Image (tube, rainbow, N blue to C red; front, top):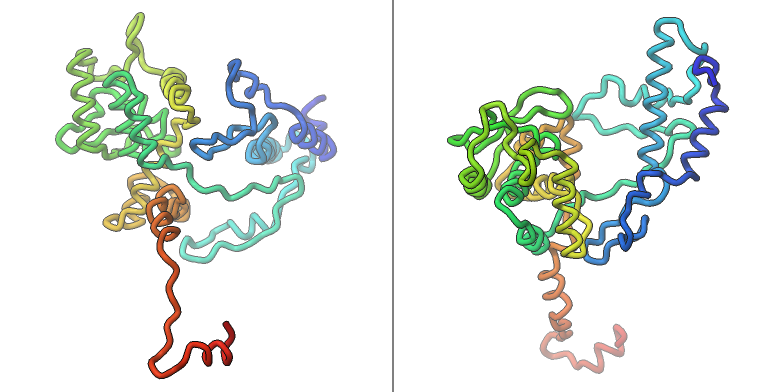
Length: 320
């Protein structure tokens, strides 16, 4: 239909279809791969379901709402925005001080309920397995840069040789949100493996990508190529980690370090809102394994009575 004639009923049909249809992106799973919607027994992390996630539907509604709001500003399109909106939500989020408590509001019609999930950090023992599964210094240096800087996957892959501050142990990346060139720290171990990688393959030009392919014509390492590196490690280990889990791992490690404040972590991760950083201050069951084993194996405390009281008399008065 003509976009200028869309109505609320058409948006209802769109949302209804997205809630029941299968996402074609899930059909890329290879034969023998994990069934969509199942949980990996090693990581406890679910694979993506066959359909569209609630966040995807909400993002679609936001994009369509913004499209019609833009054209309404110039007097084009339908008189009323076909995507329902919540006036209470707009009032709750408009000009809100970051130190004030977050107000509760009713979501707009057609908006999906989104579960509040915990960050998908990689436990230390499984991180050691993942790092050992890397086959070259290029992949080892990349993983260490990811987990020590907290940079996003595409940000780190865009780093050039001129963006490396060797003395300051940091990289300069183009931030995803602001598109500004910002510094992110990396660990001494990441510097060591990065040096070994460049010593083996040679230095690129100052403006050429730092991480490059190893086979065929030398070119920049793409997101999909690095994703395939991680997929091969997952197949070997029986896990389902993703590149973004490395950012979650770095965030969780920093947020739960007693020597770092939440403001420090926010500066490293470049979060606009400190509430986003606070999500990573969580206690994971994987990290409590040793404490839980001590708790389960600790003998039950024996009840004792003060001197001069007979155990039978105490049981008769207070119960056995």
